[in-house]
Length: 118
Image (cartoon, rainbow, N blue to C red):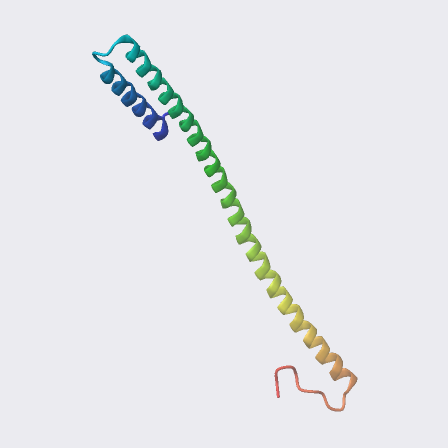
């Protein structure tokens, strides 16, 4: 499964190998061997960085999945909170009406005005 990171790694490897060989042309076998070893070391470092990048990408993707779920849960909880607040307001209105009616029944001579009226 080719990714941009793998493509970049392959290009870097090719570039390093080319530079090592160009620099080694006309050099003695010992220099060629040293350049080859240096290129292999650079290649190993690039592979390690590629692996670290893939792990970081996987972690990033996992975090985004978790964030999406948290955002969906938050939206659902906000809807539940709004419904609960509306239910509470309705219950408080009913309680106020019950209190008013109880007061009116206990004092039939003159009922107080309903809540919210002068």
